[in-house]
Amino acid sequence: MSASKRKKNNAFHKALAAVLSLVVIAAVFFLADNFFFKDRAQPVSGPSSLTGTTASSSTEGSVSLSAIGASSEASSTVGTAAAKTSAQTAPATGVTALPADGHYIQPAGSVWYLRLVNPWNPLPDGFDQTVPLVSYDSHDQFDNRAVAALGDMVSAGQSEGVGLVVASTYRSVALQTTLYNNKVAELKNQGLSQADAEAQAATVVARPGTSEHNTGLAADIYSSSYMKLEIGFADTAAGKWLKANAAQYGFILRYPADKTAVTGVSFEPWHYRYVGVDAAREIMSRGITLEEYLQEKGM
Image 1 (cartoon, rainbow, N blue to C red):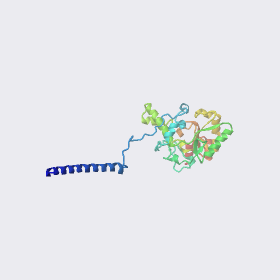
Image 2: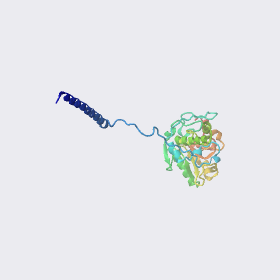
Image 3: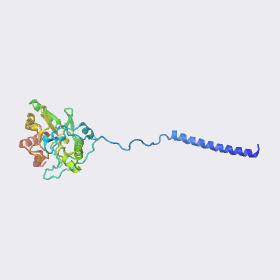
Image 4: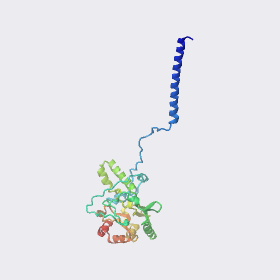
């Protein structure tokens, strides 16, 4: 073979070797990428944010607002299942007390059964989560320090033929927030501004943290023959029995007919609050409110 042909063959072999080397290197990188580093982070597909459950916009239930009148603590007694579900994850929000304007402001450190709760004395954040609750009648909850008194009162009434029925007891601030916000949204949809909607909503649904139901010491009670939270309950045998006998068990009619200016809540003959036997007897015998009693005692 001539010298020129040998040179050509050598050049071909060198070029072929270079190509084969590149192929081998590429194969090595491919294998490493797919087998040795296969656990490296991968981009996450799907939506970039999560959307929570939207609360129901209707929560008023069976309460007759026309019968109740002005501001009503009980208008949010009956909440829908959707509202209760959404309230389980509702964030806690701070509550600002209304300007006193002559209303009594309770000093800090009150005894548990005499804690005052109203628009001028809201509960501190997280208070409802500290209430020692116990089941009442399988579907409701009540403060375990007063639940026996509630049971005794209901049993006594039933034994005397008035057929008392506990309609509502403890309500969390989260649920109260849902009920109130739903009412605000409903009013805004009717054309009210945010401020006007909040003010008007508060006349039918207690602002979060200002409802006695948040304490676990309040109960809405009607009878088996009058299962409505309406002012007509006051004229029933059960309504009259409760007013006459509740104090013996430590309960008071919390919102009397002629004390709306003091309590900030219109007449609710079904709403009873545990305050202890001594305080209850004095309050009921004198026809005063919890606010007036506490102010007199400086408690």
